[in-house]
Length: 143
Image 1 (tube, rainbow, N blue to C red):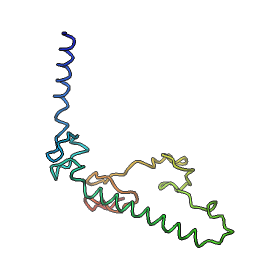
Image 2: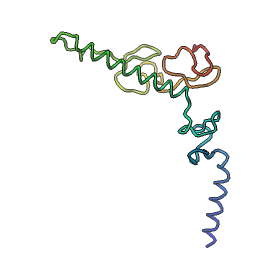
Image 3: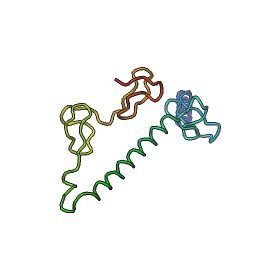
Image 4: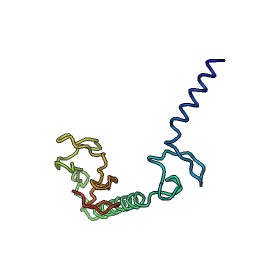
């Protein structure tokens, strides 16, 4: 029985040690991490009170993708039937060195640039949208 008691005590101590990193949402009563899942400004977890800036950026990105697909569809309909447009389609290129990318890769094979790492604002450290010229949080110009 002592092993069980010691285990229970160690488990309770571990819970108390980590407890300051979590907070309970008063709306949905879920426990969430303070660092990533808590909207401090609203006093609720991010599912109950999403970060408006993040949601707006995601919606804008989704709309841009929809427009690209719509334009690609129109462009393919306008091509003469003898043109093999699939073999002439555009390929992605590295934003750093402009080398063509062979497909869905995480790093540029030419310069090693991390293609999935989100950039952060130099002033407020907020995550920047791909291709952003200004920070959505503080308005700082992206260099």
